[in-house]
Amino acid sequence: MTEPTPVPDHAGGGANTVAARSSSAPVSARDLNGAANGNRPELPGALALATVESAWGTNGQRSGDEVEAGIVALWQAFGERPTQELRDRLVLHYAPLVKYVAGRVGTGLPSHVEISDLIQSGIFGLVDAIEKFEPERGLKFETYAMQRIRGAILDDLRAQDWVPRSVRSRARDVERALERLEAKLQRTATDAELAEELELSLEELRELFAQLQMTSVVALDDLIGAGHAQASLAETLPDDRAEDPVAALVDRDSRRQLAEAVERLSERDRVVVTLYYFENLTLAEIGRVLGVTESRVCQLHTRAVLRLRTKLTEPG
Image (cartoon, rainbow, N blue to C red):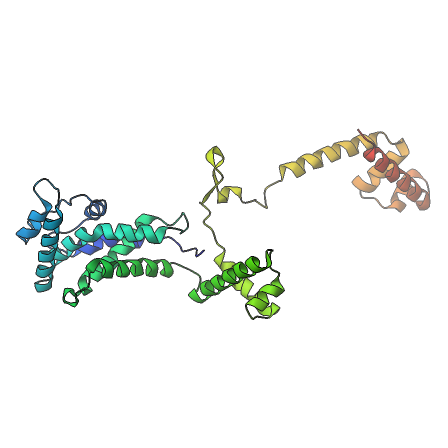
């Protein structure tokens, strides 16, 4: 599945940008959110067309015929005089369409992609659709606008994607080939079988896998687990520089057993082990300390090691 990145904060100003240049009745982000949820927008100033104002009704409820008549009149007025105020009112009227398309596009996307970010991107597509729509062609605006809104959302997602579209396409080809092979073979396909299905050599397939590695990316703040055991992915990553508590415990216990085993050696064997492993003396130097030959020290060392190994392997 494509792993798009969230729309950056600078796109969040899209709703305000829609009407930032308005000199008469600017539309705020709150207005757009309210319209997207089906609420009547509270806009400053008087509406240029009385028919559109009456379409809302005195109690904020809109009848179907009144809305249809009002929006037709609004489109006619916008076609004759495309002012910022009329465009903003069209944006508010069709804002629920943006929420619907964003919800459809957001289905199946990673959890870190916010629907609100998709809505902000879709607002730009809606504005573009309103400005370029030609009613005289006889097309339904909702159908035309949905395509423009969806395109604007996808374009913004692709702009935030660090993976080239060609690599994404190759990844889908590999996924489809694996599905076909596993359905036919009823088992996991080998690399050789997959390469043959894709009409590639094994070397080319390995190079393709190396390219596809960059598509296998997840958000570190994604939650895993269920219930009280939920944790972010970042919290489960191992720290290679941290001390392993199990290894530290095993090491400490091994040192304790070794120290006890050394204490049970004879005095001469204990001296040989101490001088050789803790004082880093050579066998010849230990021989001079004990007043024996180097070969005798070697025999003592071998005997001490065998006794230690026996004591450490004895059942507790």
